[in-house]
Image (tube, rainbow, N blue to C red):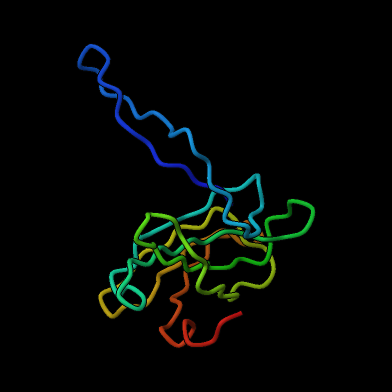
Length: 129
């Protein structure tokens, strides 16, 4: 999983997002041919911003075995992996996550051609993968 920053390019008042020049490799597994989802978790982690990312991690680029990675945002704006949570065994594609009012994580994803909705409880974050 890689990320980069971006900037706005004001070309004739037509603002466009332009990818940053520095690409950061987080070192975590992501199935390269499938959508992921990311959100800023409002609860934070040890006083730092927390970014959650859901993605399949199947071998041979298969859309299987969904995980939620938790990254703490450091003072230099880099991210450190603080947890990997494995909660979705089997087919897992096109995930979308959202934080609920109680702090739980709503997960919508495709599994075996069907759309499934689950809520990952806060307990999940106490049991790292």
